[in-house]
Amino acid sequence: MTGKGIRIEGLKKRYGRGDTAVDALKGVDMQVAPGEVVGLVGPSGSGKSTLLKCLGAVIEPTVGRMILGDEVIYKDGWKVKDLRALRRDRIGFIFQAPYLIPFLDVTDNVALLPMLAGKPNHEARKQAIELLQSLDVEHRAKAMPSQLSGGEQQRVAIARGLVNRPPVILADEPTAPLDSERALAVIQILNEMARKFETAIIVVTHDEKIMPTFKRIYHIRDGVTYEEAGEGRGFE
Amino acid sequence: MISLAGRDIMHDWGKFVFTGVGLGLLIGVTLSMAGIYRGMVDDGKALLDNSRADLWVVQQGTLGPYAESSSIYDDVWRGIRVMPGVAQTANVTYLTMQVHQGERDVRSMVTGVTAGDPGSSGWPPYLVAGRQITRGHYEAVVDIATGFKLGDRLKIRRNHYTVVGLTRRMVSSGGDPIVFIPLKDAQEVQFLKDNDAILQQRRRTAANPAFNRPQVPGLLEDVISSQSTNTYVNAVLVQVAAGYDTEEVAQSIRRWKRLTVYTRSQMEDILIGKLIATSARQIAMFLVILSIVSAAIVAFIIYTMTLGKIREIAVLKLIGTRNRTIAALIMQQSIALGVIGFVVGKITATLLMAPIFPKYVLLEPVDSAIGFVAVVVICILASIIAIRAALKVDPAEAIGG
Image (cartoon, rainbow over all chains, first blue to last red; front, side):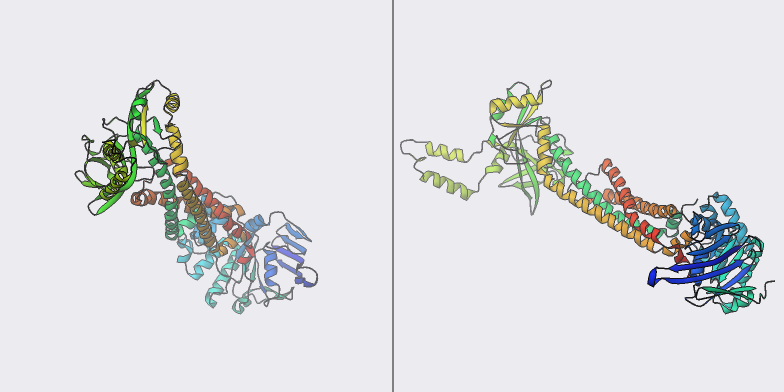
C-alpha cells in the first residue's frame, strides 16, 4: 500500500488521570487504502466511538500516529494546527441519520462544505449537482430535506461526505435505520464512490446484513483492533 | 457564502414572524412609554407656548401658577404695564376642576382670560370652530379633547356657560384640556361660596363688634361686600417689547414690584424639572424595566431557537464550520428578530396604541432612532448567551456513541 488512504499505528487514548484513568484505546493499528471500503465492528464500550472520533479529528489520541494521505495528522502528542480545516477539507462524514441541515435545500446541503472552504457559490453548487447526478438524486436538487425519502436523504448525506473529495470517509452506522434492500443499496453506492473517487471508507456498523459485503473487517474489543478477512460479496 | 441565518428564517418564517410580532407588541409598549413622556413634556411646553407670554409675574416666593398656589392683586398689571420694556400685560387665573355638562363631567383646567383680542396673552391662539369669547360673562372656548361641542351648556360651580369656540392642543401640564372663560367669572369660580356659607359668613361678621359698630354706619356693609368679591388673580402674563432684554425687564419688575418673575426658560424648568419630574422618573423606570424584559425575552427566544438546532450546530462544527459562522448565524437571527419586532412595535405604537391613550403620546423620530439602536444592541447582547451555548456544543455529538 502507498502513502494514500489512511493509516494509524499504535493509537492509544486515555480519558482522565490517576486512579480514575480509563484506557479507551490500547494500541490500534489500521490501514485503509484508497478505493477500499472496510468494516469496523465491535460491541458497545469496545472503544469504537473513541476510535471514530480520533479518526475524525474530533478528539486527539494520547499516543500513536495517524497519517492521512501523505500528511501526518498526529504523532505522539503532536497534531496538525487546524483540525477544523482538516475535517472540512480532508475527512468526509456520513452519520447514522442523515443529519441534513433542514433549512437548506439538497443542493446547498451538499454545496455547503465547498462554500465553507471558500469556493464561490456557483462553483460549489455545480460541484454538488455533479455529485447528486452520480448518486441519482439530481432530480431532487431543489427539494428540502423534509421532502425526501429516507433513502434519498442518505444519498444526499453521502454526496455531502464526498463533495470535497476527501481521502477518507467515516461512515457511522449509515445503514442502521434502513431495511436490507436499502442498506445494501447504500453499501453499493459507497463501494462505487470509493472506487470512483479513490476514497478510503471506514464503515462503523453493527449491521449483520452488510457484513458479507466487506473484504476486510476490523474488530475492536477492549480498545484493541483485530483484522479479519471478509467475504467481499456482491460489489466486485 | 450563503446566509445561513436568512435560510433558517425563510425555512420557518411563520414561526419567526409571529415571534417577532409578539416581541413587537412589547417594543410598541416601550415606544409608547417614551411617547407618553414626550407628550407630558410637550403638554407643558404647549401650555407655555399658548400663554404667549415672555414673563410670568407671580406671588413672591412661589413657583408660579402651574406648580404652586399663587395670588396677586388683579390691579398689579397696571403698574407693570407702564414699566419700560413691557409691551402687554394680562391677568390670568388657572383652576383645575370638574366641568359638568348634564350628567357627565370632564376634568379640565378652567382658565380665566381678560377681555382683549385673540393676540392677547392667555387667549387661545387659534380656533378650530366657532368664535372667541366676546361677552364679559358666561361664554367659554374649550379644547376639543373635552368632548364638548359648539352650543353645549357647561356648568362651572353655580353658573352656566355656552361653548362658543373650540380649540386644539390647549392642555395643562397634566394633560387636562383647558376651558377658557372670562376673567371675572374665573375669579368668582375660584372663591365663590355656596349660599349657606355666605349667610353664615354674614352672620358671623355682623356678630363681630369690631365690624358692627353703632357709631360707624356702613362699615358692616362694606366689610361684607369686600368678603364677597375676589380681587386676586394667579399671575400676570407679560409680553416684552421688541428690543428689550427679557431678563432685564424681569429684574426690573422683581425690584420695583416686589414680586417673583419667571422667564420662559425658568418656567419650562419648573414645569419639566419639578412638576413632571416624578412622573418622568416613573416612566423612565418603566422604560428600563421594559427594556430588561425585552432583552430577557429576546435572549430566551434566541436561546430556545438555538437549543432546537443543537444537532445541526454539532454537524456544522464537525464538518468544519468556523465558530464565527455559527455565531453570525445566531446573531443575525437575533438582530432580524429585533428588526421585525421594532417595525411591528413602531406600527402598533403609532397606529394602535397612541390614538387610544387618554393623554397625548408624542412619538418623536429621534426616539424611534434611539429605540432602533437600543433594540439592535439588546438583540446583540441577548444573542451572546445562545452563542456561548452553541460554541460549547461538542462536534462529537454528531457522531454516535
